[in-house]
Length: 187
Image (cartoon, rainbow, N blue to C red; front, side, top):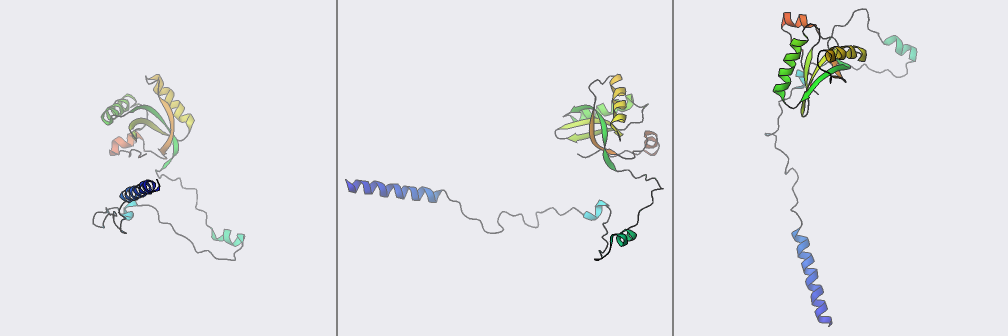
């Protein structure tokens, strides 16, 4: 009776060993699975960003707060900056669609419909939707006034969204004279 138990135990042990070894994977050597240098895309040039260079001043230890304040120069605020940059603000959203062609046609229609107002219209892509939005409003109150105008002209579902807007967008008249097109936001 002991002999058959030993054989069964031996067979089960061998089966467990064989199934255990069959389930392991071959180990990879270092560097295997990593793309080679010839297949990597290195076309990005950071010098093409045209961003501002950061300048760090040397810190002198042992200066008092008064000495540090004397060294700091405050830029003059008399000149009004005309730089156009993205800032926090509001826009009025008119539609959201998955169809780029439909969004483009709708933007053209509302641009003509609201030509008497000095608002820019944008198509913003937020996967998978193309959203047609108007305006570059610094305050919510400005956006609410524009939304009321839009709703009174046939777009009752228009609503306000908080987003990045242009701080100093050129007027539509200047755009027509110079054929200037403000860039669409990338989200």
